[in-house]
Structures are given as structure tokens and as C-alpha cells.
View 1: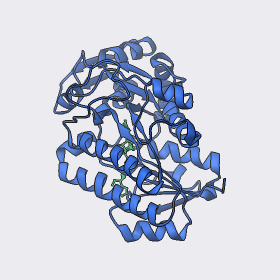
View 2: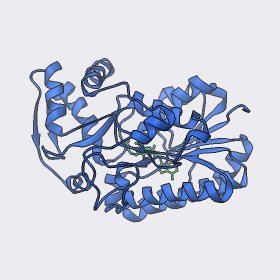
View 3: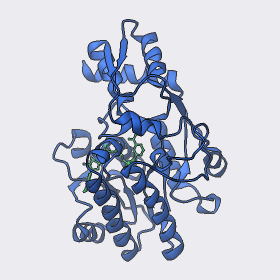
Length: 318
Ligand SMILES: NC(=O)c1ccc[n+]([C@@H]2O[C@H](COP(=O)([O-])OP(=O)(O)OC[C@H]3O[C@@H](n4cnc5c(N)ncnc54)[C@H](O)[C@@H]3O)[C@@H](O)[C@H]2O)c1
């Protein structure tokens, strides 16, 4: 295969930051073009290779960028997430749908080979089994974010069959990470709790106790993403909508894990509007298709993740 020339949109976000660093390692910093609209660009992104401002809402900007840099692979991560999306549903639609349409259109016009567009467990909603939600299930999301995620999955598959654009995507669970802060999703609490545990030994959770959600540690998220993009297309039964899972926990479960390492840690609960979003999501996910088709298997369980998060964040916050 020809050398990959990779564009990452939304590359300074929670997932983009760590994924971009890994893509540079794997494919060479010269071949990875990290972009975002943000001014606050961390040193690991700014100094390790290309970084450019690029607004996915601007078709001309995206088109010129893809042409100029001979992009043949796109990781399209620019999005408005679930929490922010409920505060501004019209903006969420605009960025997630019109932004994605610009990226798809430019990709098709420029014969880009592959696009990664993440979906989310938010794409489900009413009428699903709450446990082990299967690969193929009814999709009736109740948040604007979820609506855009289902539409993104369908668009990816549509463009695959219509134009042969190799679109791939994962229904990510909540992603936990220590490098970049999350950008306004419902599962952000599962990251904040670690910062507060280390700084203040206490956390007030906006998700209520007794609300388990599927989660994954960032190294597994990156592994899943790159492994899916590298998988032989002949083995793939699905395109933009593979279920992936690692573990599930409720706030009290992660609090108990943190307490094993920081015994003074305490938690209380003050649910806000995100509780309702969380309650519309599944408690666990069946990822058999991903395991069968491209050998997906997470490395981290909740205990290993907790120990690693506290270790990394303690050093970072020192
Ligand atoms: N983090 C999670 O737990 C999670 C879970 C499920 C799915 N996802 C999906 O993964 C992808 C990345 O999520 P994330 O957690 O890194 O989100 P994030 O909010 O941390 O990052 C998104 C980035 O997109 C950028 N952006 C917003 N509007 C833009 C525009 N018009 N042009 C260019 N960039 C723009 C933002 O500045 C931000 O840096 C999204 O598609 C999201 O829906 C994330």
C-alpha cells in the first residue's frame, strides 16, 4: 500500500491528542497532519510535527488542505459531544452532520482511501436491552448527539456502497484518559473523579450511584481504532458501527477502586441533566463481532486502569 498521508480533525480533543501521538509514531510525524479549531494546543502536538488550524465547517478549507497535503486517510474526530450537544442541539447537528458531510464530500472528490468516523453508545436509546446490547439493534437515540451518531454510521455505510469510500467506525463507550481533558460528554465524570481524588480526596458526581455505563481506557481506545483501520476489509462485516467494549462501572464502583489506592477518598452525588442521558444508554455492550472480525480484545480492566490513571495523573499534577 502507498504511504499513508493522514489528516486528523478534532486532533486536540480528548481522543485526538493521544491518537495523534500514536499515529505519528506508527506512520511517521511527517505523514500525520493534526488539525483542530483550538488555540490551546498542547506542546506534544505543536512540537512533535504538523499542526494546523482547520475548521471542518468550512468546505473550502478542508478541500484545499486535503489537496495540498495529498491526504489519503482521515481520522475525523471533530465533534460536539453529548453534554455540550444537549446545551446547544443546533450547534451539535451543525458540526457533527454538516462538518462530517464536508469531510465525506472532500474525501470522495479527492479519492481519499479511508475515513474513520467514531460513533458512540449514544447512538442507541429507547427500546434496547440494557445489558449486552447486540451489534444489530434498534437505534432510537434520545439526545441530539445520539441522533448525529446514528446518522454518521448510516452515512459512512451509504458512501461505502455508493462510492467505495472505505469508512470505518467504532461505537465507543466512555473513554477514560490522563492526557487531555474530555470535551463535554456524559462520561466525563469518570475522568474528573481521578483529578479530584488526587487533588481533593473527594468528588461530587453528576451521575447518580447505581448508574453503570460501559467504559474503556485510552490505550485500548487507540488500539481498537488503529486495529480496525488496519484490518483487512475482507474480514469486516460492518463499516462505521462496530460495537467495542472493555468494562462497565457505576460511580460507586470506580470510587471503590480509587479507594483501594487512595483510602481517604470519598464520593457524594448531585445528579444533573446528564443523568437522564446516562439512563438512556446501555449498561454493557456485546462486542462479539469486533472480536471475531478483527481480533479485538482490550488489555485493561477497571483495576489495571485505575492504578495506571492514578500513577500517570499523580506525576502530571505534581
Ligand atoms: N471521549 C469519549 O468518551 C467518546 C465516546 C464516544 C464517542 N466519542 C467520539 O470520539 C470523537 C472524538 O471525541 P473526543 O472525546 O476527543 O471529543 P473532544 O470534545 O475532546 O474533541 C473534539 C475536538 O473537536 C474540535 N472541534 C469542534 N468543532 C470543530 C470544528 N468545527 N472544526 C474542527 N474541529 C472542531 C474541538 O475543538 C475538540 O478539540 C467524537 O466523534 C466523539 O463523538 C468520544
